[in-house]
Amino acid sequence: MERFAELLDNLVYTRSRDRKIALIAGYLRETPDPDRGWALAALAGTLSIATVKNNAIRNMADERFDPALFRMSRDYVGDTAETVALMWDQLPHVDSGGSPKLGEVIELLNNASRARAPSLLAELMDRLDAKGRFALLKLASGGLRVGISARLAKTAFAQAFDKQVDDVEEVWHALRPPYAELFAWGEGRSERPDPAESAFFRPFMLAHPLDDGSVDLADFAAEWKWDGIRIQIAATDREVRLFSRGGDEVTGAFPEIAEAFSGIGVLDGELLVRGEVQGGEAASFNALQQRLGRKTVTAAMQAEYPVFVRLYDILFDHAEDLRGLPWSARRDRLEHFAARLDPARFDLSTIIDARDFEHLGEIRAGSREAAIEGVMLKRKDSPYVAGRRVGLWYKWKREPLVADCVMMYAQRGSGKRSSYYSDYTFGCWADDGTLLPVGKAYSGFSDEELKWLDRFVRNNTVARFGPVREVEKSLVLEVAFDAVHESKRHKSGIAMRFPRISRLRRDKPAEEADMVETLRGMIG
Figure 1 (tube, helix red, strand yellow):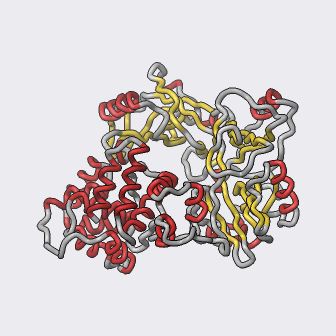
Figure 2 (figure 1 turned 90 degrees about the vertical axis):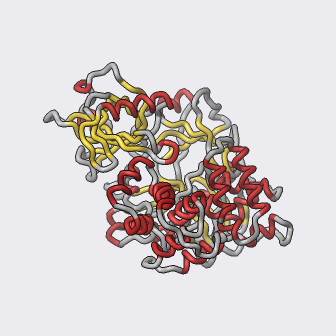
Figure 3 (figure 1 turned 180 degrees about the vertical axis):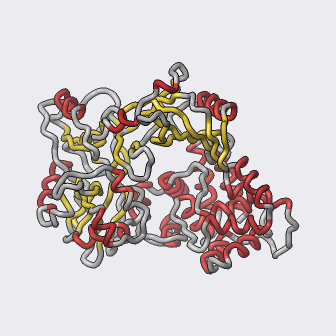
């Protein structure tokens, strides 16, 4: 456990991507099984300890610390696990047999009941130093936050054992932690794992932003970029599984899609909710949000938010790998495959008919449909390759909408921002002169602007509600967002899609900020 804790500590204080990869690669080469497999799973976000939830850590803290002191300390530090680890030094410790191995910790926690989890965590804490305690709590709660993505963790494995990262991606989702087969392949003790008999995830092909310039539509096809979630359907003759863009299985959340799918293959598409009008177009992303993050879903929710998949591409037709074919050939195969599917659950993404790129720009600018984010541009001779490859696919998002809003509340961030008030709730004016919240943002500003905003919050606080500060309603923020739609969950009746702060309007009086009705008029 000490080596894993040391790795996390080094990763926290390392900004260089290459250095992070080298640190993880070194750990994976030098650490025995199963510890390195559990560490890789934790870094890649595939480790789940079902018996430990965040409330188990809070319960453990409540038993040992003064609750008021703990809340104040948590408010200052900004992270529950770090707060507990720091305060633990003040408690009398028991010598319980030395530091546990990482594999031992995982086994103990996975076999414990939820009732037993808080006391077990405490026993393990007493066997660790400060770094180890922090690592244990972050591991148990599933939130490492050390600047490592799943892709970077896989890249580190590939570098450690001289493999291609795309080959690692190909087999990754068919294996389970602690990845004994993966390491056996990496060290040359066995052949590459073959997951061909199961319905497993293949890495998505991604697009580069088309910020400037243009493309020749003689070489590129244009499709709408739909505002749902990217989904992959993998089907064998025995099972159908659905995967999110990150490779997480989401079949349980959308069982009607798996049940309606017929055929053998792997397809790429966008999961959307059908609009209110029968046979209508897609509803806004806000409707889809009601279905996200669920392991199971009720029949009533399926009826209220009926989902379907708008198909983009086909990777496999039965056992035939089509990824090396040009897009145009895959499109023909996709059309033939889709013709056999239930039209209530599956349809094809339409190719936009445009004379040239300028005409496409006019079409793009004229579309404010709730479920459209912009345009996808796909080179007609492009193969389907994992990740982003320059020159093959581009995403050309429509210009963001903008509104002037007033800061209402602020809260500290997490990780590197735990000392700053960096999460801001903002509002617009209702007809009766009251300010109603319309969104929350924590991005779009520079480090210098963050420091200025933090000082503003501290100097203009008018009330406190736990970790939240209410501020004087005097600062106008120019907020950019992709769309706005109706929302029953918000007092204003609307919600923004992807809001981010684009400018601080210190020159503008708060009373000149936008009205809620102005935003309502932007609903596509």
